[in-house]
Image (cartoon, rainbow, N blue to C red; front, side, top):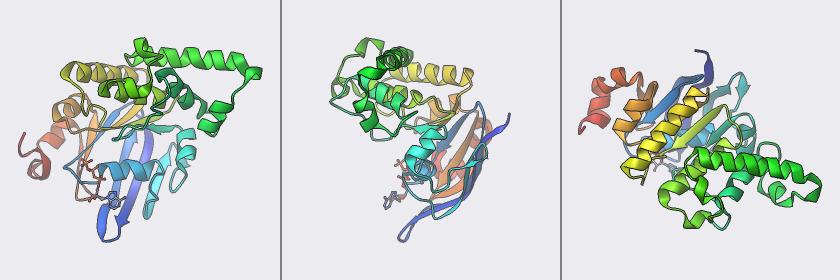
Length: 253
Ligand code: ATP
């Protein structure tokens, strides 16, 4: 399996808080790569540093040879790295379909404004975009909610809509920040099946998730953070039996 994302010695401090210190790992093409650790360990900060929301202080970030280090979020998205957020970020007064169409337009243009300005001269492109967005909604299991406003969807469905919108940019790498949070067991099973089928199609996934059963069951490899530092990396079996991980995170499991 070839390397897709190489992260080397990434650090991020907020004043005196060392949110990330010298974090290094490699994500291989076609795997589901987990990021776990206790609350405040630095997981979301890592995603934010990788996807341009925070500027890392030091380090190197390469996606198949392209440096993403300190690049802007839209440049990183265009390079093929999409993400979802721990706190859902949707356009609440737009329908599910429109939210995904905006995600599709960010693939070729610079975002929402361009999506809104699309006019009659490219109606065919618009129809294709709509059909593709509809397919994605069905794919993530909310096809029947096409015309529902995002704010009226259940929490679990909003999470699925975020995934559909991120997929609309046809990324090489998709990072999901706690996608199962607030989902019931049936929704979690559907989410797991979706992640597995995306991997089967060749997509590479990164996953922050507190549901240990879900994350251990689905990830090919994981990295474990504690106080901003990597304390372990490897397959679920290796990580599960690592004494440092048991002490910092899995002790209560
Ligand atoms: P959780 O599992 O609770 O979501 P996490 O592992 O994602 O936690 P982060 O949210 O990355 O942890 O936070 C890591 C540390 O960095 C925490 O101490 C947090 O308070 C701090 N931190 C994160 N973002 C900021 C910020 N913008 N300003 C100051 N401190 C921050």
